[in-house]
Length: 257
Ligand code: ACM
Image (cartoon, rainbow, N blue to C red):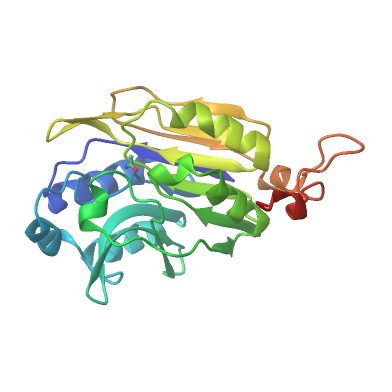
């Protein structure tokens, strides 16, 4: 299975440009799984509620529909971040779309900085199966909370899809640890460039069980990269003859007294 990312520089508020760039770069990537950045169709730095009202979409909106067409055309699992309008609230969401057209939406649980002014937090992680592989999603700052990837791992996730708009320099190295402690694959699709005074750090990354960095991208270039993996490797949780990182957990000892 080839898993990959598209790293690009969205233009704030220009959904037509962003979506056409995503289609163009996605079409050129030879991959079974394509991950785009967080809030890829809108840009990241919202300053007014009105902007969010204008740019957000429901999960069956035009951006998701265009990405559905891409998933079908590429016969690939496509994941991208978008500003979601649902039930009177706004969420920082990511859609995972399989080539049968099915859409699953994850709503970011751990909101970063000023996101808290605009978005409502999501309340659950979930997994889904496609091509005999179990996938889970997190969004950007969720990386900072080991519980996020651990929860998905305990639910059986083998590959974590991670749309991101990273501004801190730690995530790429932290992902090495996350993939050591969980023995999973992950794809971090970051964006590049400046937007309204904020600089994004690029270096999208594909990491394997054991913390092996299969690919780390450039800091500032637009690029699309995929690598071949065997997702079954993520099923092996034994570290040696005596240790298994799931079976050796001892939740009884993790309580606070
Ligand atoms: C972030 O969560 N976009 C840093």
